Length: 397
Image (cartoon, helix red, strand yellow):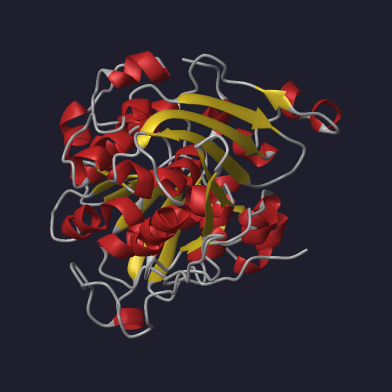
């Protein structure tokens, strides 16, 4: 997640009548994904990785997670105007890593880009030419249509040919495409935004089934989603004891939601991008709340037909059976339940009185909503078990 997150308008359950009562099971330890592009030798032949934008909040999470990744050699941290500056000067909690930040991008096998929108797109052509695989945590390679960039982000995309070959990096929805990148010379992953991650995982089973007739997404985010640069609206005195709606009239992340919900309709049994009328124009209202990390997306759905709670339970259990980072829960989840982890908790409930559906997704915006998810996609591209380096339990309290 970048500073654009708070920009102006422009990521097996037992069932009962009360919903799932147990989390989906993770993939068994010996059932790693197909090793497309797997490097031989594991620790003896690590993947050389650089992080560009290492001084922000997402950069810090990338360092924290990748430094202990058993298949990665962190060969460079990059920050504007930095020359061999100890990372502890920027991120005190990472001082013991002994790493330093420089301004030049070193030769690497893969590069994570944690940059403001419009910046990565200008860098990627050169990095691809140097033979590097790209994981962009900004929005520059998330949208498939180049015409969407002037509308939602205010710039003409400088590399539409590369945009066409990029894969949207939500593994739960695009695992096969990410695996395919492992066998290509040019691999670009556009890591999803934080709000779309929570929203899409909450809604994906409904979208595949063509059940979204009308959709309103009411979401809450902690202030770390705004990035580390000081801003008046994220100062303690402005945020504390207050809740503020923003992005009214068209938050930038709506573009991802509409794109992916439409694609889920095409991939579902109806094979129709128009199967979910409510996904064509998502009504999305985000709020800034006085906490540091976390996203909660409450999705209010009027279904296209009558459904039962038992049908919904089965739909979600089937959708997320074996997913290592998605847990379907029986009670409404809280952001504290996933703090510091790469987990998304999902809740689905039918309101018998109104006939509407409530689908809730919660994530840590800096992990599953940014750095952790990017590493998960990186693992898939490189033929690794996608849990590698990401098996931390949530923090509490």
